[in-house]
Amino acid sequence: MAAEALNRLGAATAVDGSEWAAGLVARSRALLADGQAGDRGYAEAVDRLGTTRLRLELARSRLLYGEWLRREGRRVEASEQLRSAHETFTTVGADAFADRARRELLAIGEKVRKWDMDTVNQLTAQEEHIARLARDGHTNPEIAAELFISARTVEWHLRKVFGKLGVTNRRGLKEAKPEGRQTRLIEQRG
Image (tube, rainbow, N blue to C red):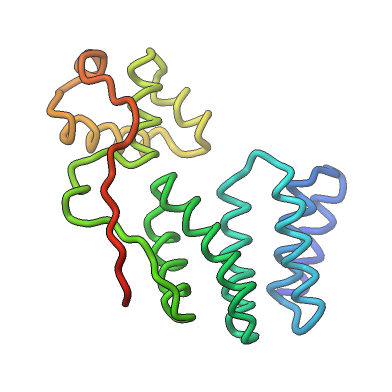
């Protein structure tokens, strides 16, 4: 069943010829492979997606590759992939993926940075980006299209931003000027 789906994905993306499509096919192939074939597939996915602007897809591939490397007992290589994935996910506010990468890093004995409670009222990178776009006059659908998320997700983020900045509308964003994250990170083990 999975192999059949992979074949359909490969056929559908072969027409496209993009690095993005080839990277997703390589990652999907790696998920179904063992040993050297899995290693080659993940490495190819990271290489191909690394040439695109799709940072989240690259981070997802690095996370999967790091998890695979950890299971193979290749801790040093796993750490490199997982750290890169964790950094990207944390930067863009993809908290669930960041936490998954964090757990994998902890499993190989690495120290991992984690948000402390003082950061709860500060904007995530995603919130900051959305706030800047909204402040600059972009509509929710325009922001959604630029960030590849839904307009409802933009609306949800804006509600959080308004609460954190103590404003009630987009005009308030012009006065608040969310420019740059001020985050305090603590080292935590376990």
